[in-house]
Image (tube, rainbow, N blue to C red):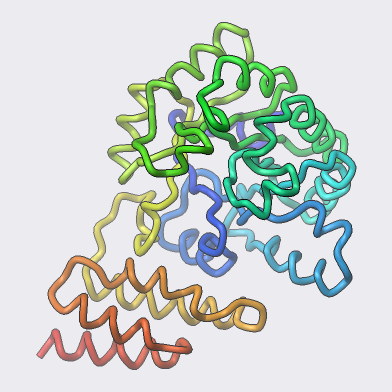
Length: 321
């Protein structure tokens, strides 16, 4: 089952699923100003979707809200339980997603305590069962995997063939181990090796590289060097919804979009998420121009979108005078 993946240009460029960042509000903004070839939801607990209280389930379901403009959109799920994965995958299919991605790379300790995320690298047989369960649950959707080079050490040569044995449509390799987090430079030579392993095994799974791609030009260079079918970009999206169209907005454009972002967040998620989550975005929007530091300080003290708009409009007016 290839689904939309079969029609992608090569190389293609996609946005990483980032917890408390690539939520429904931010994805809506990105789809409007600079849509990547694929969008992912934030990761969602398969166990929670199936086993939580009704109230808990409904809250998680809000992370699976998407608009038509975001297609192709992939639901990213995490669990170490094949049974809940199968049911959650069926739910994702029912909700109309274009694909399912299984998180096997997240280093968050609370997720690792469940045996999920990067911890699955240490239990490869369980990882295989989880992938197969997702395929059973959603037979009409392509299933992909996002992972790392290894847990405490790089075991790509053993780990990747194990994943490829399940024939996922794509595997994203974050070119660091779990132990390294993001503390060392991503090793794109290992993404290149992942492509070689895939070719040696005669697999038709796509390989995506992830790590340290600063902008679209840099991502293109990394794709050319490694031979990866696609590149996933993450942190470069902060303050830059135009990342995937390689457009450089004016300061005024960027600041006005930050207001639009704040309003979208408040409208779509304000009843379940703290407005303080927006502050990491404001830090990035207000960066690299005269007066940015002073503006950032003011934005950090806000509590709602109206306050953001008033501060931004006053700043823009002052710049024009």
